[in-house]
Length: 108
Image (cartoon, rainbow, N blue to C red; front, side, top):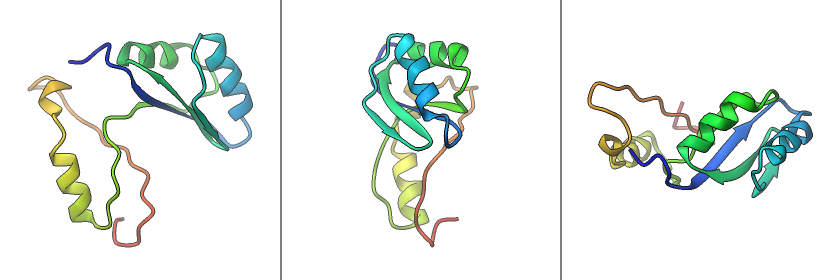
């Protein structure tokens, strides 16, 4: 597993709490790369994700970006997800959960 590889981390929170989440994240030594009404983006490793999960009190989720791509159908989503090197990220007897933000009527 790539424990120390740096990637985008998305931290989500409730609308109205992003200022507090940003303050908490900065106090842990992370630079804010982007921000929106329900969260922020920073950069870090999986170890950093664990640290954020432990110490952020206002966060809902801490997500390590594995891939980012445009897709226009459920088939595109399945194809792109199946192309990811999951065997490098999880053990053979492990499990996987995929979260996505989809703005497409054909993908439900």
